[in-house]
Length: 101
Image: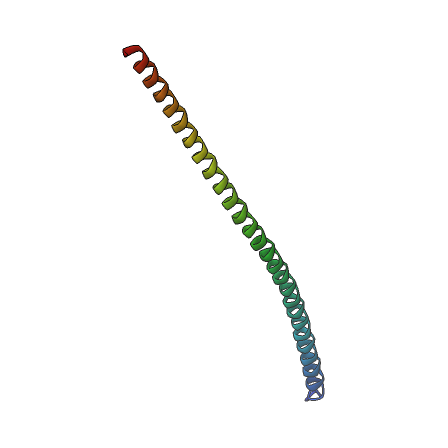
């Protein structure tokens, strides 16, 4: 005899569809949570990038200032060496002039 399974199948398929819907809802909730987390991480990265950009600008300004300071110090040393060597040459010239006179 035939069992009355025609009524069981729709009920079983409804439960199957409900289970699939519940699974899809769970997956969608996970995806939404991941998107929100990703957005927060992107905001953190953007904030860090802004901080790094500010730090980069400060580093460039400081390095330019140091480079100029070192160039001035280098030129001061060169000028001092020229003055000292010039004074020595003049001193020797004066001594030679006085001795050979």
